[in-house]
Length: 310
Image (tube, rainbow, N blue to C red; front, top):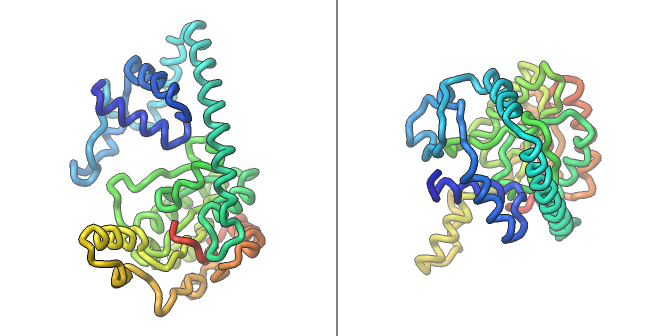
């Protein structure tokens, strides 16, 4: 495997909190270089290079359905594992588990910063949502990039269906319709589908709210309403600073205010149960409880939560 691919895998381990100290990097490098990487995703990839970004390097690419193939591949790998290798895996797992626990404790401490502030911090929003769903059979059907990865830092993911992942090709307006589709797929399994949905993302396809109400798709949308296309807002600020032009006009075309959008009213107008705007963090927990009860009855719900940018 190439050095570029090795470094990419290290970044993956870092992103999920499995590399906490410099000594663990060497262990991961040894792991990546020693093992074979197999993909069964070729049938999924119907776009071109520009759609899917750079393809990762693998040792074996199989044209197969992943859900059908993976159980057989898993059993084949298990048959090749010796007792010695099992002990190695257990030892490495214990080390990574310790590193993950230290990372979790650090994240919990960092999440307390600005805990009672208004607008609501993304850390508190994520923590409050986790407290309501952690004992349920839940599924996070939105990406975490724009939420500063707080769910990944605070929640416990131990089932494959608990996270939908990202857009793949960095598609605009992806979260709103994608989360509805995932919630529809989860419906037959009785799973509690939740999403943290940006306000800018929702503005690309607000009609999804009517679709959810019309088809009775049980999904809790918690708005990350920072009243801006904040990814673009920050980029304009950064570029303006670079060119020494000041940032006083960075909000032109990048913010969603004057007037502020009341997403609760938008959702209600399309037949979705909604509350908000919620800007006081102490009101968030009770609102989440009420909204989750609606979702458990088989209907969509939305909370318009006013948040800090990231």
